[in-house]
Length: 266
Image (tube, rainbow, N blue to C red; front, side, top):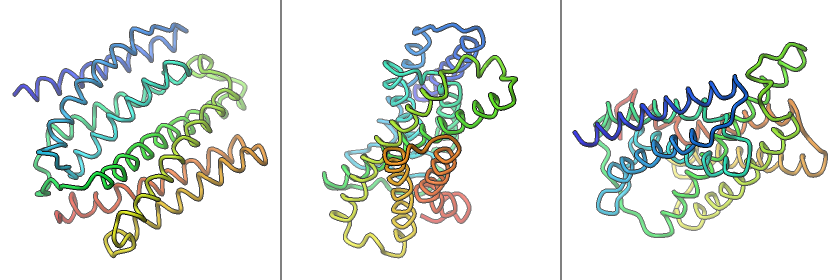
């Protein structure tokens, strides 16, 4: 019962924070108190995650548990980035997603029969960097979608008030590539540690994850290089950011969704 109370409180605060951010954007206001409010929801979310994910130093890999963990980490990264970058408006989309993932985790706690797994220290490095990389590139994908809509609004010469309140396109693109660059660093560490610490990274149950992750790494690394060498921007950056994240999404959650929720296999 206490977990449900904490969970529903966090969900409510997430949704209120998103609504306040939306209102502030429409009325061209900036209230840092909204982010503090959202921070409370994230702390409550973290408390629940620590209870559900770590059991006697073991890791729970159930679908909704991992989705909730990623959503929580995305919220944390957004709040940290918002301290010195104008990315707080992404909370309009990110906080409701975090609320939804937390709600699904609360309602389907026994969605699988997965047993929490124990790992060595180096393997936790691989797992943690993988989740951080996915979370950062998740934010980059949302930034790319927002950038695409903003660009289309400006091309139509009749941008809606919501998008007039966003930072200039150039600033949005700089933020996008900063997120991608940081995500590539963590994805590189994740892949490198995987090759070192996982005995057979191309085993049948890991091959598709490995190949898709490598393809995503190539795309995001190529984007960073193209930005530095050729000044890539606009639709090119947006298109390949979304393709790269789509590959990561399939690598991280595609098979897990099919096996656990559709085929009910562990």
